Image 1 (tube, rainbow, N blue to C red):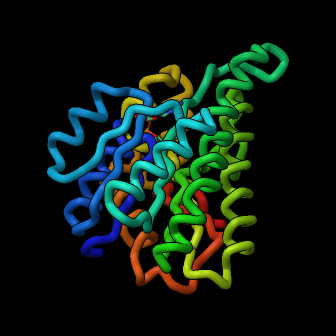
Image 2 (image 1 turned 90 degrees about the horizontal axis):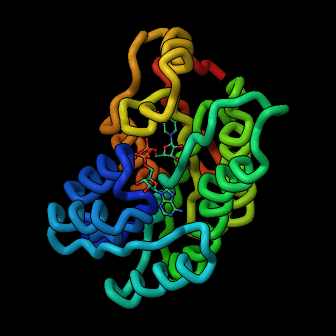
Amino acid sequence: MDNRVAVIAGAAGGIGRAIAQRLARDGMRLALLDLDAAAVQALSEELPGSLAMAADLTDEHSVQDAMRRTEAHFGRLDVLVHSVGVTGPSLPVHEYPVQDWQRTLSINLHSAFLCCRAVVAPMLRSGFGRIVNIASIAGKEGNAQQSAYSVAKAGVIALTKSMGKELATTPIRVNAIAPAVIHTPLIDQMTPELLATVLAKIPMGRPGQPQEVANLVAWLSSDECSFSTGSTYDLSGGRATY
Ligand SMILES: NC(=O)c1ccc[n+]([C@@H]2O[C@H](COP(=O)([O-])OP(=O)(O)OC[C@H]3O[C@@H](n4cnc5c(N)ncnc54)[C@H](O)[C@@H]3O)[C@@H](O)[C@H]2O)c1
């Protein structure tokens, strides 16, 4: 992994941080992107040589600019991990505020589209590319009271499938991960009832750890992930067996 350059979108989040720490240990050079300027700067100070950028990744120009700055700074761009997300409110569809629907789709799905779209050309210039989108089991199953989040994550899975096929004959591999509940601040947005329901569905009876997501990202970002593309990898403690 030495000298490979990875962009981590949503780097300041619970899962993004763990991914950044793991890829740094593996010898990658990192561009850390997040809306939270202070948190992404603090993370960058822990990871020498990393480039921190505060950006709203739902905005086309901010995304293009961040990818351009990454390639200009490091001379190449090899890996994108998209770990941006919000769950949005927990409400049934008939009570779901339209603005929250649009915001949840924008942060989870539109930002994934913009980031994926912006990295293909630099990856082709590098002669290597790995895209890893953090989706969710909600995108496979559809969580009650979380329609916008479920739809957005299903969209991320479909985006991954389309790009996997489009880029199959290039050096770029595009895969997604579908975690069940992972122990991060995102779960604090869930009501206690929803969290209990989610944990009850996991045969291992526990949430995953961010490091367990990072371990799978490390493999999906590596040369060893050579014959897999357009695929969604389970990370659900036995919940998803399909
Ligand atoms: N935590 C879980 O249980 C779980 C389970 C399945 C999937 N996921 C997915 O994993 C990913 C990471 O989740 P997490 O638990 O680390 O959440 P988190 O809330 O800790 O991190 C999300 C990060 O996204 C950033 N972000 C939000 N809007 C943004 C925007 N417009 N532009 C740039 N950055 C923005 C936030 O600042 C935050 O740092 C998300 O896509 C989430 O849906 C999480």
